Length: 99
Image (cartoon, rainbow, N blue to C red; front, top):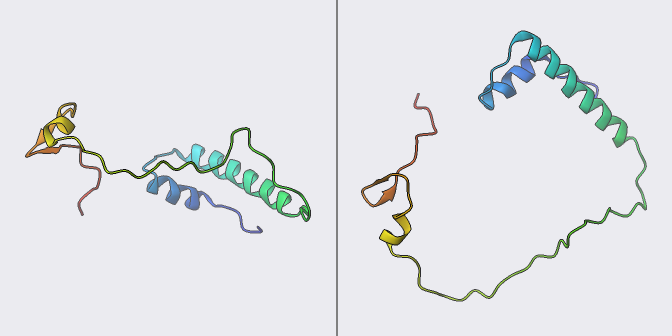
């Protein structure tokens, strides 16, 4: 990767993540991210032909259970531990801004 991340790139990503940084933090994080990307470029230069993937310490098998129909909770049972309810539903805080 020949392109470097600019402070504007970091500012854009920070805005998308709803983070705010000072100018000195933007400079610091742009530098850190460029260092990480440079290291990844260096790793991409390695010839990994014939190298087996590393193993995991836990089994990576997908376990499925039998899909058996069973009775579900009533609406009242499902809502009894909800911190707030409204009209038979769980009330949650708004997370999207209206423009």
